[in-house]
Image (cartoon, rainbow, N blue to C red; front, side):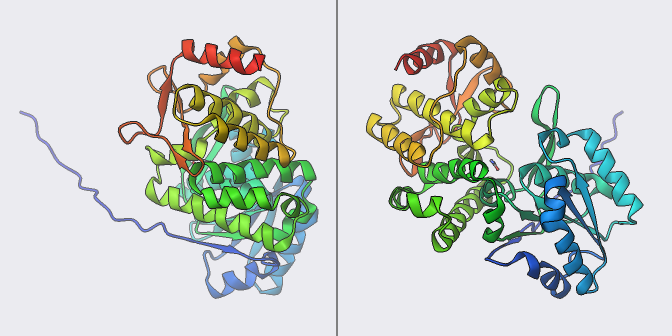
Amino acid sequence: MIENIRLNLQRVIDESYDILIGYGLLENIPLDLKRNPLGNKYAIITDSNLKDLYGEKLLERFREENLNACLIDVPAGEESKSLDTVGYLVGKLLENNLDRKSAVIALGGGVVGDLSGFTASIFMRGIPYIQVPTTLLAQVDSSIGGKTAVDTIEGKNLIGAFYQPKKVYIDPSLLKTLPKREFISGLAEVIKYGVIYDRKFFEYLEKNINEIKRLNEEKLLHIIRTSCIIKKSVVEEDPRDENKRAILNYGHTPAHALERLSGYKCLHGEAVSVGMRISGWIAVRKGFWSLDEWERQNRLIESFGLPLEMDFEIEEFIKALYYDKKVEGGTLMFVFPKCIGEMASINGKYKIPVSEKELRIFLRELVNN
Ligand code: GLY
């Protein structure tokens, strides 16, 4: 006889959080946390470049507000996104007496955000964390939506968790110290939002290229706010990346392969730009998208000073594509625009299979163009 004891765990969970955006917000974070506490102690995790630039000052502001806080830094760069660094951080959190009621503050770009979020998700089975993104890419994309991860030697983001932050503080004035190349790289994700979701926003970008490149405050605020609104709308619809959220990965299937082939020397946004040209071309050739709009997308990418091409060998590129998390049952999956502002779907599914045979033909056309 078999006994069946059912453990019922149906729960309604509210993981809502606020994304605050404003110039000069950084120094007001401690005051806001004093009024709306998220922990009994805060560990600010940052990287070696940002420690002196913003970390120490933020720590001082916490102390001025009589909040219990410490500052921990990791070496700047993708190499820190590892399980080894997670182990190091857990040690530091314990050394600084953080407990289950404490919170982590991720002060940095995508690497610090993903790494700190993942560490928070496992420390004492999960403590709250707060995102304070310092790069354009992190402000418009990685700090929102709760994807946390570290890399392994096999690939990027292969170990991770969906773990939403409790709050996101975006201070666009931090972008003034960001190297120009990194700022431009972040614009690739901004263009992506226009293509996948919002035609008017795409047109806005076309009209304001020079002011955005010059970091005009009003324009910058507009592009960050709009990107955040688009990202939050998609995440609200599909928080666990089961269908619609894949549209946020437009251009990313080829981009991840290009990053891999470059030994992660190119910046993420640069690879995404080239990736949007490649995915867009496949969309045109498979009949989802018009040639005119593909060319229009490419013109915008180019006007921002982003690359449209990178050298690669087709067979090696195809092999590298298989490391993408969108691969399903050994089949390569892409997401495609239908028109600027809307993505294509087949029977309600946004991830669309592409065979290797088709891919070879389309890639050869692109390389020979
Ligand atoms: N960056 C893609 C996502 O958050 O789903």
